[in-house]
Length: 254
Image (cartoon, rainbow, N blue to C red; front, side):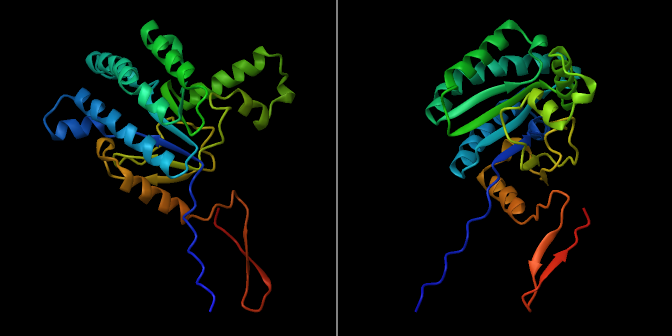
């Protein structure tokens, strides 16, 4: 008697993008300063990197600081900048040993020389790693990304009638990576918040009430399971086989 076939493993997204929301609310619920929530959020990020790498995810992109976050109180913004320096000093060697390549996307002009130097050190130190690529979006906005891509194209001499999606994609901040397959937002909000507007055109979305510092492997697995259950058609139609052996077309709503 033939052995029963093994059940197929759930489809794993090649690229996951995460809006890490809820650090401040997590701290407020515990009567702690908001910056404490951000510190615990860094620990959660390290867990997420490990979990994604262990599950075969090749690219992980996280929204660490948006171009709109400058509107937050000066004390919180200053604390976040210092947290960048602390996180690089604390975790860089560990992440490099795990095979993580770090890349930073966003407008670097507005941040301090110390922060820029820390980013450049992290990128140089991990550029040979291939297990998983961690892209940290800092002082990033999706609209900024599209504008800077257009400016690069114009500066390179591209004419208006030469502009198309393929050309602009080459100038986007994440031209080195495939578009995200799965977009996750924690913290209960259901919006994109100007993150990767160009790149998530065909991403699957997963929203969770879990606050970012509480995000763990179980949450990653729930998101991947939800992704695996989706029927990704990219605007097309799905073809199936009827009981009589004929091909039938299942028309999607979108």
